[in-house]
Every structure is written in C-alpha cells, then in structure tokens.
Length: 353
Image 1 (cartoon, rainbow, N blue to C red):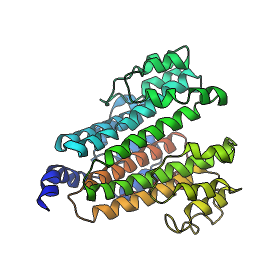
Image 2: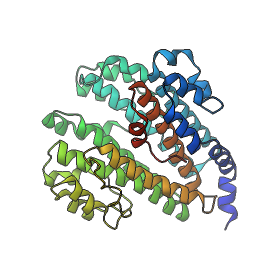
Image 3: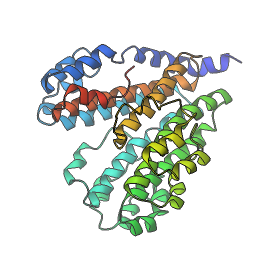
C-alpha cells in the first residue's frame, strides 16, 4: 500500500523539500523589517531567490512593479510543481492558479465601475494562467453584461451571471466578488473529493481552515460595514469550513458586536484566541483577525510537513508557506513605500517559516 503514494509523490516531494530550504528565515524577515528605506530593503534580499527581481532598475521608480513580478514568480513556481504531478492531484494544484485570475478579474471589474484607476491594469499578473481572459476589454466594457460576454467560455461566467440582479440592487460589486470566491471553493472541493482517502483528509483540513478565514472576514464586513440583515448573511458564506459550521456561523450572525461574533464563531473551534484578541487591540482592524486566522493555517501546514511526507499535504503546505513568505515581502516593501515604522509593519506580518 505504501508504494502507491511514494511513487506518486517522490519527484514532487524532492522538489518541495529543496524549496522549503530556501524560504526566508526569521532573521532575514527581521532585517527586511528593520531596513531604513527601499534601497536597504532591496539590498537585504541579495543572495536570495528574490535578488533577481529586486535588482531590476524599473523597480527603483515604481515599487508596484516589484509586487507584480513577485506574484508572477509565485505563479511560475506553482506551475513548475505541476510537471511532477498527475491525475486528480495535478487537477487540484492547478485549480489554485484560478485565484490569480479571480484577483485580476476583480481589478478589471472595479476599473469598469470607476473604483480603480485604469493604470492599475499594468500591474495584473500576466504569467501563464489556466484561462486567457481579455482583462482590458472587460475593464472597458460599457455594461456588466458586456463584461460578462467576454467570460462565456470561462468557469467564472455562471458565478457572475447568477448574481447580476443582486449586484444591481445593491449597487456594489461585493455580491459578484463573493460569488466568484464561493464558486471557486465549491469547484475546489469537488477536486478534493477525487483524491485518495488520506489526501482528502489532509486537503479538507487545510482548505477548510482557509474557508473559515474567508467566512469570518466576510461575516464581519457584511454585518458591520455593509449593514446586511441577519437573514441574508447565510447566503454569503462558503460551505465546507473546517471548524466553523453553518450552525456556528448562524450564532455568530446574531451577535451584536465584533467581539461577540468572534466569541460565537471561534469558541472551542480553532483554538482559544481570547488571549490574543485582547490587550487593547482594535478588533475593527480586520487585518488583525485575518492574520490571526492565517497563522492558524500556517501552524497546521507546518504540522502537516512533520508527518508522512508522501501526501498532497506536503505540496499544499509548501504553497501555503510560500504564499505567506511572498505576502510578507510585499507587506514590508509597501511599509517602506509608505514610511511605516517597524512596529506597524510587523503588526501586519503573517508568521514566517
């Protein structure tokens, strides 16, 4: 029985283990946070996998190019893993690339709505992605229907088309953006169910923790920032969370403060966070909640890496940790752009590997 997974994952496992050794350590992250300016930030990355990106002259004039190149490199590293996978495992890992397309699509739609500047198009991730979408045409479409027509052969068409009436009624893209995410995770879960029993268990947990994070963040936004009625909130969550069941979320919907929402949603669920969520911290800062929940996912990824290596968990955990590292690098870089002090930058960082 053991030779099946060993044979299936031996090549990709070797590649992932080698890549894990190149992740930035805590000392390097600290040095990046301590950098006095962008120039020192760039030089601190000398000798790392990111040196080539940040040595490009155009980044000195426009740091946002650095963010775009980081994400494109992330896509490239992700795509390289597909060469050593096959069957449902390859389909699952390939599906994660749609997240970059969804983010591109959100930006294009926001530009069409006048919520973003047209120049933001040049910062879209252009690395090879599963579908060739005409983002420029979408951003320039005269109506949402015209924009939708460019997606007729993509998996995103139905998820947008089904909430057009809601979009018109509310006058915001929020229903569209949420439904893109709900559909993405729905199709992701279908791919998870095609895996072997052991791989299903691992993938359900790691993906479920990410769904918990999404659902709780959306709940707080919809309830306290969009003032959505309690009866409508259940339609805006992703089924399949690891610990935050629909019953638990329903209880959270009824809470009258962010603190009570967290108590109802998290109690005996993803660990005792009460000690983390006090000490005078402003719970209205959603980034704090998102970081806490993401750090739970990181802890689970590390735990998975310490187990039997020849499972989908090794690949998924690496992708989580690599995505964490790149988001930390981007966060620190943006902190230098906006001249944030070290303490403020560090408050926005996810736990490093």
